[in-house]
Length: 277
Image 1: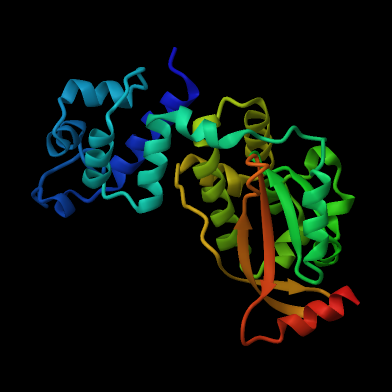
Image 2: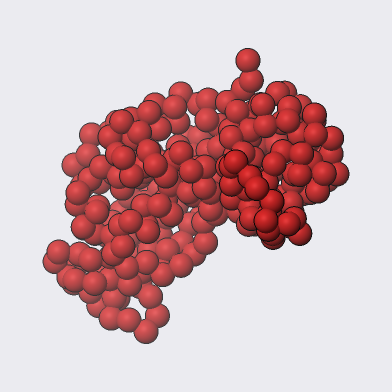
């Protein structure tokens, strides 16, 4: 039986193959096809590998493509930089697992990390584990989203709250777009660790609870995090334009800190000050 990472690699390749327009890789536009996208033999030919070998890869067999082959497949399948990176992680999962080292759920953040969060003052900030459990936050974040303190510890997971808490849906400026972005970033991070019990449990619960999550998860879409401006609609202080940052403490690699700062040129800093008063 193939491993979860091998199965994810196979399903990811199939999903990307079906999205490629044959004309984009120089194949005839009028070629009749029963299914959209490229055929396996076309991907193999364009990538310089045998049809049999590529078929085995899509079947989830335990074969290890070289970096050169991974790069060739990414070019053939017109992958984005985020998709290319995800393919590399799936092809050699031990590399991404080495980055992981998740903090055990329920242990909370180290004291020095909590002090750092508190020192950020009116900038909302929180800490998440590799499976996105929220294990620490500052007062500014609790005022932005009071539900973080009210949530049961087992439900205090960023992805779970985004897809199940109506208060988060109201808080996010564009919930459909924002929730989809969270989902694709989560998948990019955990793809090689889909066998981890906490990830298995979270995905199963979300698939049962949210049709929107279920459809997004089935797409196998991925994206990487990038700092950007985000809009929140807070019931007390109105529209907040916040720049979204993500940091990893050097001495706690299994932890990520998410920090929101007031966007330049906006009145958000004053609104955050009112929220913290």
